Amino acid sequence: MPIQELILIVLLGLAAGVLSGLVGVGGGIIMVPALVFFLSYSQHQAQGTSLAVLTLPVVVLASVKYYHECEKMGTPIDLRVAGLLAVGFIVGGYFGSSMAVKIDKDVLKKIFAVVLFYTAIKML
Image (cartoon, rainbow, N blue to C red; front, side):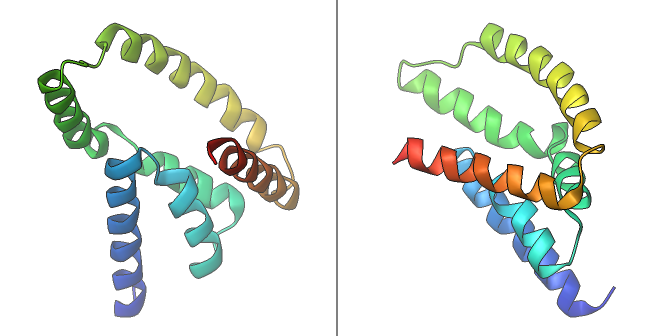
């Protein structure tokens, strides 16, 4: 792997990690477009890579930090809700990825863009 590519990947991971810890986003919003534009990944490859990064070790430190800080502020994270969301996320992620791999990459890219755009407008 060329050193420039290695540096780009590490910086991408760092940016996604900082944004994930800061505002709860990173994988889809930062990594997927960056992998497509800077590393010429297909939309399928980028989405799969982003999901692979979000495995347990990556989110543990940020989750523990939020858990302790929210507890100090008197607004603890409800682990029952997190657990139930995780179950839904696991099942939904499986079925969503099963659908995504059957969709043409250009159509998938447009769906991804619409979801990001809609989310941005709603958040504003």
